[in-house]
Length: 153
Image (tube, rainbow, N blue to C red; front, side, top):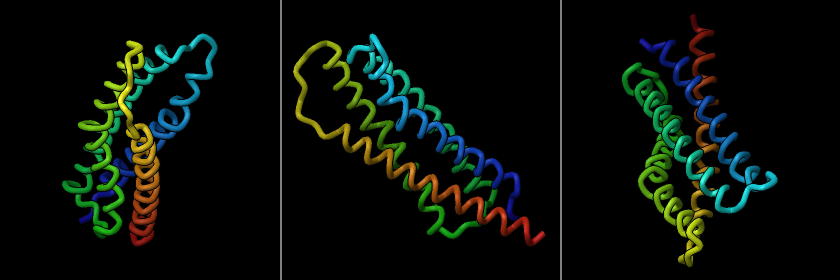
């Protein structure tokens, strides 16, 4: 039997995640540098703090969704779940590779030290865009699946 509660939790978690991602990655990240008195160093310090917090929120939300997919028996074809799994893998890559490396680069800027040539920030932005697209598609599939289950009752 499919868990209606599992769908509700997965749907809520997915769209909360989308909200955090949009608010921080696509709004806060560039707006902070436009505020009066915010230097590059201060902006990078704020960014490290905020993106570290976002990453922790994403880890929690992705675990909640994964739990509901695996344990609460949310019946979806793998082709629809793959959007979540791509987002989940991106969070893992960001946690263990991209964010630590970006923190090191930010520290070099803050310390006014020379920077190595790197496209890492571009890769990070691309991962964020892919993650957002995957979460939107996954969330829409969840909503569609939930409404078809509700109509059958």
